[in-house]
Amino acid sequence: MANTFITPTAVSREFLRVLHSMVPFCSSIDRQYDNSTEFGGVKRGQTINIRKPTKYSIRTGAVANVQDQGETFSPLTVDQQIGVDVSFSSAEMTQTLDDFSKRVITPAASRMAAELESLVMTKMMTSTFNQVGAAGTIPQSALVYLQAGQKLDEFLALRDNKRCVVINPAAQANSVDALKGLFNPTGTIGGQYKNGEMGDGLGFMFKMGQLVPALTTGDRVLAASTLVDGTVATQGSTTIHVDGFTGATATVLEGEIITVAGVYAVNEAGASTGALQQFVVTADATAASNEVDLLVQPAMYTTGAKKNISAFPTDEGVVTFVGAASTAYTQNSAHHESAYTLATVDLEVPKGVDFAGREAMDGISIRVVRDFDVINDVFITRFDLLFGSVAQRPELGCRIIGN
Figure 1: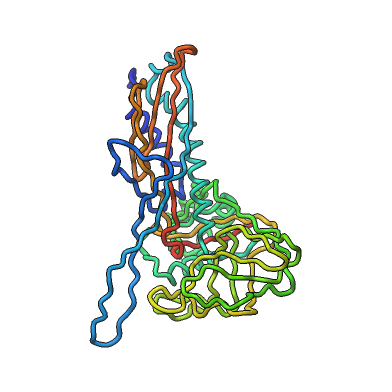
Figure 2 (figure 1 turned 60 degrees about the vertical axis):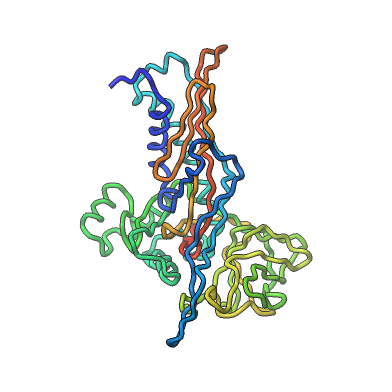
């Protein structure tokens, strides 16, 4: 049916509809929409707090050991604003909404979706320390996905149909071929054949993402042994001093994964899982002579409710890096919805323009503003999204490294 008056509400809602269909990673994580400034708007750089689940210690015996609620929060700064700006003539305003969507909204929303997906997934993978798979090998075996599920199980991720795998096209093609028909119900096999997609299986909902990031390792040149230089001794420490580099300016880049001999991950009961704790480097580092301070996550605890490792890194402990130097590796994702949070906020709607409005759908808020350029007889329209993201519970996520 013809729509001779395209409203801000109609445009915003259609933009959100298209955008949501193109962000497989962002649609699989926790999305929070802050409308506390519904009648105004939020400025870039504002920080909001995302509540984290409380961790308790266990009591033995009959005597109560009452613990404070002690809620903690992850600060999330809404510091990323992206937008698409388009122009069209006044004559084009009389077309149907369907035609307007095909010509203007869909291309604009597609571009914004790509940018949002890339920015958020790259940041979340850079913040994730669990990893499975073989560097340089396209994931395709059932075992690699089951191992990702094992990581989530060890950190008590719920099995509530909110576990998702997002893999790139190469991983999807190889996985569908390698796993076709493997213990799958007839409907799933049919869906794989018809759509070329993994679908539901191995404890995850599989999605294909064309913007799965590749993270690059530093130009680290290592001696025969790269070792911890000095024992870590402080609860909550996030620094490991390492030596054994060759070359005065060797680099380790944010997002790289390391393990330390003798430092094992523990489960919620504090017992070793039998696997070395993986640490993610949280900031680029350049060696001075042959040594460097590496900032890592998770923070290290050997006692109490936050205990996450069996022992601190000790002097001369062997440090192992994942992958070869100066090499880009694809970072597919296996995660529970609650591992990562994307938060969007309302941008201020300006006055005195041709039209302006904003709409929110499923945790994403979009603002549209249109004004008239009288000289060129065109309407200039901008679509804006202000957001932030945080790895709220990164232990409930796991990278699946690829080639």
